[in-house]
Every structure is written in C-alpha cells, then in structure tokens.
Image (cartoon, rainbow, N blue to C red; front, side, top):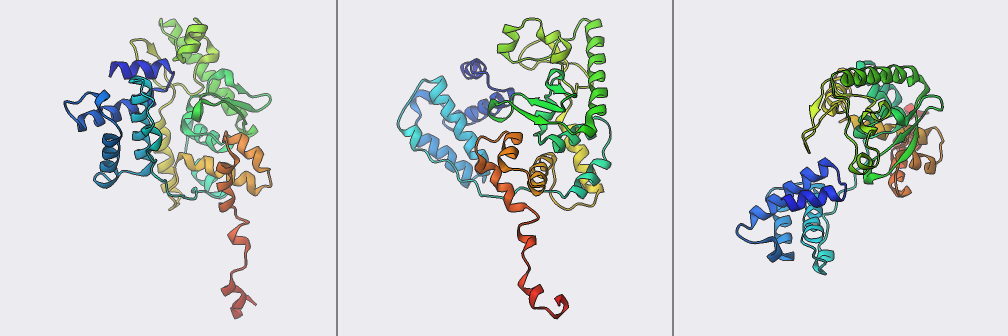
Length: 319
C-alpha cells in the first residue's frame, strides 16, 4: 500500500481520494488472496465489480468509484496500459432530478440555525457552494468589497469565481476577525500553521503561517495532520453543519430529503427562475458542461406548474 499512497500523493490527489482508493484496492486484493496484483486482470476486476453489484447491492456510483480505484492501481502503480482496461463498462447511474427547496423553505431552515453552522449554510445557498468548498475557504479568497469569492480546489481540482450575498458581508467580516484572532493565539502558543497542498507548501515556505491562508471557518481545536506529525488548525467540521441542517429541516416541518447540497440545487434553480442566463449559472456552479446545468431547467416553477392541468380545465369548479 505504500506504493499506492506514494503515487496518490505524488499526483496531488486529496486525502479523501487516498482513503477511498486504498480501501478499494485492499478489498480487491483480499478477494484474491495469495495472488500478486500483476497476475490479476480483466476477469478478476469484472468478477469483483459483479460481486459488488449482485451480492453487496452497492449503488452505481460506488461501483464506479471501485473501478476508478482499480484502474488507478493497474495504470499508475503497476504501470500497465492494457486494452482490456478501456473495455470495462461503468455502471449506469439512474437519472434523478435534484431536490430543491422553495425560497420560503430555505429561509425557514436558515432561521432555525445559528452560529457558524448558519453562516456556512447561508453561504452554500447564497454562493452555490458544495459543503467542503464552503468549509475550505481561505481568508485571502474572500473579497467583501466586490462581494466575490474564489473557490479553489473544487470538484475536479478546478477554480472558479462566484458571488457573495451582500447581506452576509458584515457576518463574514466578523468571522474573518475570529479566524485572525485564533491564528494569533496559535502563533503565540508556538503553532499557527495550516495545511497547504504540497505544491504550495514547497513553493511558499512561510505561507502556512500567514493569516490570509488560514481557513475562514477554523476548527474549534488544533489537530494532528493525518498525513504527518504536524499540528494544524483544520477547518470547521462538516458533520457539525450537516447535523444542524438536518435538525433545522426537521423543525421546519419539511418532508423533502433536504441536505447541505440541497442549498446548491436551490441556488441554481432560483437563479434560473429569476431569468438569469444558463451559461452564467453554469460558471457560478463550476460545471464543465452546460448539459450538467440543464438538469435544473426540469425543476423550474414555470415548468410543469405553468401548464394548466386538463382536469382543472374541465372541472366546473375551475370555471
């Protein structure tokens, strides 16, 4: 596994990807004990994926993640570029419409939250962010004068620029002051470093101690880096925001399966409802292809609800 971890880190893949890939590779090798990976191939990979689908009944996305991990093993670690790798079919994911809250439901949920959790959730909706994109914001990426935000290291390691709600400017300024104060306290105690990607850490040796690189939403406590022995102050806990959103949704009496990601779906849908161009929404969301953004056109209020139902048209009560 050291070779796998080394290659993952050499390519700059995230800690989550490293954990997921090594987990699947270990599980695959255990399914064929006593056999060296170099002697495994298409038959074993397909048998493993078939077992996941038929016996374990895992979702299509999980099957595809396992396949990606195994292809990484053969291509990047074992150095194999064999024709059979291109012939393995990925599991087909069923098309599902995104869950969307109305504007009133969004405000109802946010009004039942408080503190950092509420501010993060408000930013997810107001800026169209994924949860980790919101939690990983650095102080230097927030422009409260222009009300703009640079999202770094998003899905696919892409960067984009999105907007900040003007109504959150004061709260974000206060939160940045909290981040600066905690950072100074850490420096006074002999700490004060924050995790940076390997490339940045090598290029800018002192950047990890600069206030601008600290997380806008710092964790309550310092922690040891799982990839080393350094003590960092990480970002705010994602599980804290997830629990707060779940509780607020329940208290609001909303029966939709709303999560943190629902705020992002609602952001896109509400912009399209307001008449904004789909290309603009695509750029704000960071989608590579406009076809991904087009899914929100299927849940617009001016869609099915704008068509007069034939039963209503024929009913005497509708006249």
